[in-house]
Amino acid sequence: PQGGLGITQAIRRNSADENRTLPSLIMTSDTQQVTIKQARDAGASMVVAKPMSPTTLYDRMVWIAFDRRQFIDCPTYFGPDRRFKIEGYPTGVGRRASDKVIEVAAATEPNLDQSDIDSLFMAARAGQSE
Image 1 (cartoon, rainbow, N blue to C red):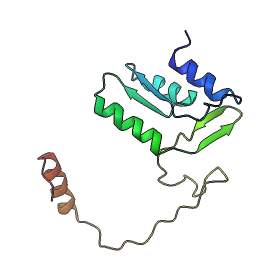
Image 2: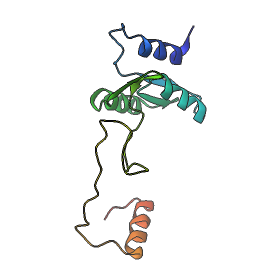
Image 3: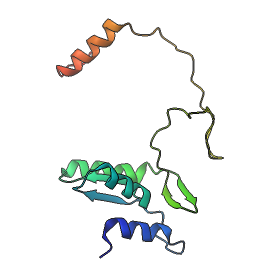
């Protein structure tokens, strides 16, 4: 009766539930941004759109089982860290105590010129690789 979001949220918010940190995969045919955000905010580890192939389902299950994200526990949310990748913090410093300083290393090779970049995209569009 609660639906997937309600069940996920109930499990995540119950501190006595031993399954609280298990990965949670939400499957939905409603791929509107608001629905995806609701699933994320309920504590889902991953959201997959239906219909899906068995390969896609398997890949996502493996991803959430073996590439576990850190769990965040605060008054308004309990669940996996909602950030998948960090490309840098807006102010240069993260908001959490566990956030590490990100330093970009110096380039080891010269930058590609525009014609090289264009040729890579053209090869990709044609289904070729260099």
